[in-house]
Figure (tube, rainbow, N blue to C red):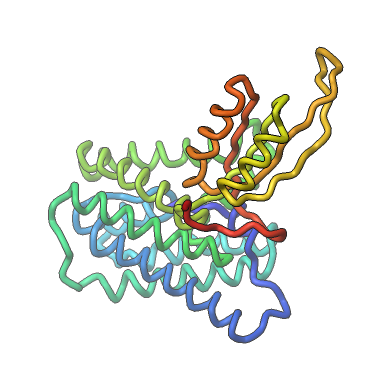
Length: 297
């Protein structure tokens, strides 16, 4: 599964961490790696379904040669570990090496364990969820389990393509190759498993109850702000703005809410000022202030 080093870099292993915190990080990197191993060996591989990235190539090579999957995962990722060490940093590279090593060992130990299902659709759905959860946990705690995007970040500096576009092209090649190796039905199952895993990674990293930033421009800004404070329990900030076309002074309301509060906030704004300008965006992390995620009352 192609995880994101850019996300991983955002949560590196810092020097000066207390031993309990460091132990927690190492535990979750190992746990996530084992979880990915379960998704691969107990669901995907027995049903001839691929993941993307280096893992997908490793699955095909293991099928063709008969050698253990963990050998290819470890060997093929070593060059990317070196690139990560040189281009991104020592702590990221070491946490990545730990994750890849545990993943490789896990696939070897799980190889002869009886599989959960032989139904390809069930294997696709649950394998994708478990694999994505494992990758998401590792990213969240500063590691990586696939070197493809590390390479994409480096190539991105020399080619007029984004990291996502480079990774997408790489995976299209892998899934097309899977069609010749395992058959086109299995290739399509592989694309579905990859999509499910990708969405699961987002949920694990951001959380189901992800935060959103809200910008509101209205003549009734004071009433709307007070209503948000009273009915949602969210603090608001009033910013000074100026309309570029009219030159009029504007008051801009800014606040942060959870996804579960989005519908209620929209109804508040619609009720007070149907013509208000409203912009809502996803944000991956909120720190400081008085913001706390909570249920809607």
